[in-house]
Length: 171
Image (cartoon, rainbow, N blue to C red; front, side, top):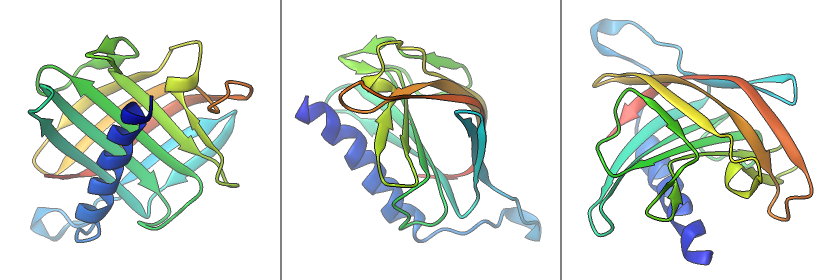
């Protein structure tokens, strides 16, 4: 279980380090408003300060990943949305669900609330996380998501609905 938790943490750290050197500008001088938003138990949360997607090829275990993060800033510790897609094939435009891929969930939704409490679809008995990637360009990643996240003990659950993202793509 501890090894399983280290992979998302390592991917999140990689995203934070890489993204700290990025900006919200796209080519041609136009500014794109990047965001990750969702209804958290019916309350709208929209993060625009730090919104990135990082792709990784984990050759040692034969998996490809895409981590999408939305927070108020690169150092925020609350109201964080973190989405992780894992697959045997390169991440592309398609729907990813909570099926198991080499022992990991293909789609995971993670949320840290305003008090710093951590919730994850990996802890939820419902296994209903869905992340749909609808577009990938050299600059951006866009899509939707929904699911139920629970605390580590499974005693408290939160419904995440109407999730959407348009984030800067990092390599």
